[in-house]
Image 1: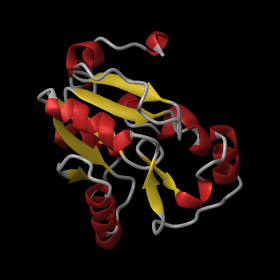
Image 2: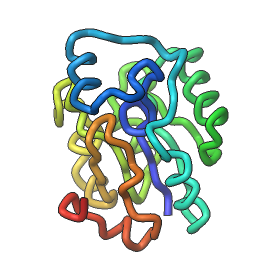
Image 3: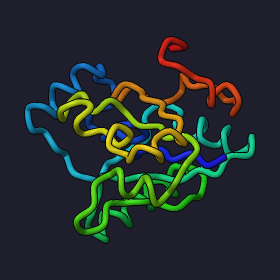
Amino acid sequence: MKILVFTEGTLFTHQSWLGLTRAETVRRVRAGESPGYAGTVPIGGAALKLKAWEHAGAEIVYLTSRREPAEIEMAGKVLKLFDFPVGEVFYRRAGEQYADAAERAMPDILVEDDCESIGGEVEMTYPHIRTGIREKIKSIVVREFGGVEHLPDSLADLANYTAADS
C-alpha cells in the first residue's frame, strides 16, 4: 500500500503558530501571514503516525506545495529533521497541477487537508484527479492544521476510514 501525504497544512505548520487554535492559524493565513519555510515544524505527532503506517507495511510518499528546487529540498530536510519515514517528495512540475503530481505518485491512499484557508476544495488535490484514476485512490481529508494523529494506525482501518469516523 502506498500512502501519499500532503505536507504543508496537513503535516507541517510554522513554529510561530504553535499554541494557536486551528481557527486562528486559518485566520492568519487568510489575512496574508506567510512566515516562510524556515521554522516549519510537524503538527502534533504526525511523524509518529506516518511511522505507524510504515511499520504496518505502507510505503509513505509526500506531496509538497513547493515548486522551487531549494524549497522542495527544504521540505525533504524538514521531513528528515523530524524523523518522518523516508519517501519520495512529489511536487508540481512546470505547467502541472497537484493532481498531475498525485497521478505520478499513484497512491492507494491520498491524505490531504481541506485547504480551508486558501479556498477549500478548489485548491485540493483529489477532486482534480482524472476520472478513472480517482476511483483507484482512497481520499482522506483532514482539517487544515488539524493534524493526522486522529487517523487509525491500522492500514485496513485507514483504507476504510470515513470522515464520520472522526
